[in-house]
Structure formats: C-alpha cells, structure tokens
Amino acid sequence: MEHAVIVGAGVMGCACALRLLQRGWRVTLLERAVPGAESSASAAGILGAQSEVASAGPFLELCLASRSRFRHYAQELAELSHVSIDYETSGVLEVAMDAGEGRLVAARAAWMLDRGLRVEVLDRDQACRLEPGLNPQIIGANYYPDDHQVDPDRLSRALAVAVSRLGGMFRGGTVTGLARGQGCVTGVHVDHELIAADAVIIAAGAWSSRLAGVPPLRTEVKPLAGQIVQLEQRPAQMRHVIYSCQGYVVPRTDGRVLLGSTLEERGYDKAVTLDGVRRITTMAADLVPGLRQARWITAWSGLRPATGDGLPLLGPTSLPGLFMATGHFRNGILLTPATGDIMAALVQQQPLPEDLPSLKAFSPLPVTVATGENHHG
Ligand SMILES: Cc1cc2nc3c(=O)[nH]c(=O)nc-3n(C[C@H](O)[C@H](O)[C@H](O)COP(=O)(O)OP(=O)(O)OC[C@H]3O[C@@H](n4cnc5c(N)ncnc54)[C@H](O)[C@@H]3O)c2cc1C
Image (cartoon, rainbow, N blue to C red):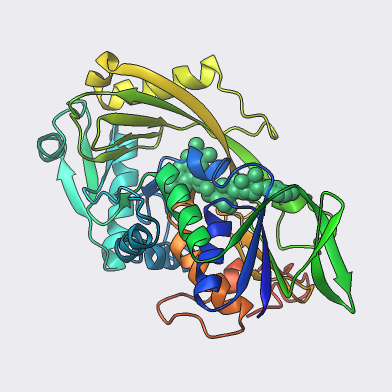
C-alpha cells in the first residue's frame, strides 16, 4: 500500500489525508502541536467565495467549486466523525458605509451578476429589514445568499476525528527537512528520525517555506497575523455575516459573535494587542451599534499562510514526489474540501474533478522569466 506523509495537521493536511485514505493510501500526519492548533481553529469560518474575492478568474472559480462542496462535506464529516461543523446558510451582507464604498459594492455586484452569481442589491431600508441590528446610517448592501459559514474549530476537530477513524496515523513531532534519493523525495526527517514515504505533502500553513530541502517555489509563504474578538449576545440577535471594507461580524446561532480582523505583518508573533482589539471593536460597533452592549468573552490571534501573489500553492513541485497544499491566506476554510479533492487526484496522477478550474495559476513551480509561464499546466 502506498504511503503519504503529510506535514501539518491543520484543515489542509487533514483534508488531503481524508481523501487519500478513502482512495486506499496509508497516511501519516506529522504535527508538532495538535490538529488545528494554528490558523485553522483561529479562523472566522466565512465561506466567502463572493464576499472575499475581488474579481472573476481562476481563484473565484476555485472558491466557487469549494463552496459548492460544503453542504455534502458537512454531512460526510458528521457521518464519519459525529462532529457537526455548524454549517450555517443564512448568507453574507456586504455593507457600504459611505458613497465611496457604495460605488465599490455596486461594481462588485455588477461583475458577479455578469458571472451569473446570486447577488441581491439592497438599499438601506431593505438591508436593515434583513438584519435589524445594522447601523441605520449605512447607505446600502449586497446580499450574497450563497456565501455561508462554518465553525472552523469544529471543522478542524471533525476532520481530525474522521481521518483517525479511517486509519490515518497522527504523529507528534517537528519536521526539520526532506530526505532525497535518486532525484526524488523519499521521506521526511522528524526530530532526527527518518519517516519514509512514496509522496510527501507540505501543508504546514505559514511555516511551509521554512522546511529544509524544499525546492524553489512560485512564491514564498509568509505569516500575516489576524486578531479576532469574541463576544456573546444571548439569545442570539443577529442572523447574517456582516462584511465591510473595514472588517466583519460573524454571528453564530448559539449567540457567540466573532469580530475580525486585523492584517498584520509581524513575523510569527501571535500577540493580541490593545490597538488591534480597539480597531476591531470600533469597526464592529460602527456596523452593528447594539454590539456595544454585548458581553466580552475572549480574543485571539492566528497566522494566515500568505503568498506573494495572493494565490495558494497547490500541486507538485520540481522534486518528484513532493507536493504543496498551502498558502490559502484568508480563504483556507472555504478552500478545504476542494483542496482535499485536488491533492488526492494529483498525488495519484488521476484527472481532477470536472468542476474545478485549471490549476495553472496555483502551480507551486516557479514562473520562468522567459515565458512568464509555469512549467506545470
Ligand atoms: C484571524 C483569521 C481569520 C480567518 N478567517 C477565515 C475565514 O473566515 N474563512 C476562511 O476560509 N479562512 C479564514 N482564515 C484562513 C484560514 O484559517 C487558513 O487559510 C487555513 O486555516 C490554513 O490552514 P492550514 O492547514 O494550511 O494551516 P494551519 O492551520 O496553520 O496548519 C498548519 C499546521 O502545520 C503544523 N506545522 C508547521 N510546521 C510544522 C513542522 N515543521 N512540523 C510539524 N508540523 C508543523 C502547525 O503546527 C499547524 O498545525 C482565517 C485566518 C485567520 C488567522
């Protein structure tokens, strides 16, 4: 039986493991902390294929393909793990607070409608009827009924349990580098031990570029910190994710309300700062004034795996047997199911599911200066 070793047991590592196990592979996940401990469980959980994407193109198509998998994915994970990922379908409201934002939101609705996506363009009264807690000074909103949300902490746990039930092996330890032989990757070094593998997938989030022996990539992966504040309103008073140029408010059905987030370039520092919390809470109270009375619960920070061009790294590297599944930046929760499907097909050298776009833009291979093209189609 062929053996895949996956570095990192966040949502990406686990999603790849799940699909490979289902295709008959033996899988070992190497994790230096606990599954989901880093970016994955820190996320807000917005499945923002429309709210998060700036324009039409391959990245939008990848996001849409992944979003369309979630209803079935939630059911599949519940059956395999008995953990609900709290898939919630009430949609996202992207609001405009002034005329400039109004023009931006209108332009976004136009290209989405051109692409055939569902968008409802709402004036102030319509938006406030849909979500009565909204600041009545907003000037309008786009409603994206197909952008949903999940609880990322539950998604991380459901995936880890499902992988474990299907026979995936979790092993604690820090991967320090890759082993090579006859021009291929032959395994990984973990705390001075060699673990042999037929295929290695690097899914180490913001740390993916730090492993010794990884060949040159299209772009480096770097950490971009984001802080989140959690409040509580019981009983729950809001239904929709509220999204704006400044940040977002994510109500859970149980009364938790997440406010996010900052985008900070400060290395691997995960501090929660007074300045970050002040910016997030001011933004949220401007969008939904009633949150000023909500109860403070906690705040945290996570490290998004960011790439130079904003696109993930998905696929084979120039070192045979070595694959990347990383760099999902702000959209890794959304891209979890599609990434698992893509990586399992690529590792087995099988065709991709037909609904997925060309992966050329996401190839980890460096772009050649002469042609401007990736080596991998
Ligand atoms: C504040 C915030 C809000 C976000 N909100 C959203 C959102 O609303 N929607 C959305 O789609 N996405 C969101 N994201 C992005 C999403 O969380 C990430 O893109 C996704 O979790 C990345 O998953 P991953 O598995 O690649 O990385 P991680 O979850 O970081 O997992 C990588 C794992 O690798 C392990 N590791 C690293 N190096 C080694 C090593 N050498 N040896 C062994 N193990 C190693 C780490 O311990 C870690 O567990 C958000 C992120 C943040 C920080």
